[in-house]
Length: 165
Image 1: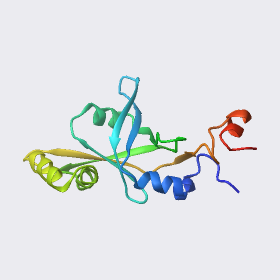
Image 2: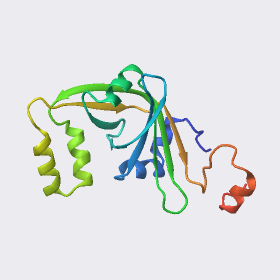
Image 3: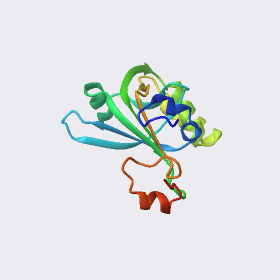
C-alpha cells in the first residue's frame, strides 16, 4: 500500500533519499514578520533526520523565522518530468560563533576545495555569528509524475504521462 502524502515515512523513499543527497538548491517558504509570504533559494544539508540551512545572524530571514518558525521546503528537479520533495514543519534556530560546521560542509559540496577554503577563510573573522536553521519535517510529500501525482490530477493527464489508473 502506498504511503499517503504527509507521511514522514516518505523520507525513506528512493526519490526522497536521492533528492536529499543531491547538491540541489531548495526553496524555503516562510512568513515574514509583517505577515507577507517569502520564498528564497537555500543550500541544504540532510543529516538523516534533519534538514539544515546555514545563515548569517542578523539577517531578515533569521528575524522573520524567529517570529514565525513554520516553514515549507521544496526540493525538485527540472530535467524531464519533475521529481519533487516537499517538507513542512517548524524550524529551530541555534546561533553559533564562527562558521557553522554544516555551512562549511554545504559550501564544500558546491565549490572546489581551493575555492571553498579561500571563501571560508575570508568569512571566518572575529565576530562572525551564524545561525543553524534545523527542520525536522512533520509533513512530507513526494511527486514524481510517474507513480505519485499531485492530488486531483485529471485522469487524462495521468494517462498521458504513463500513470494510467
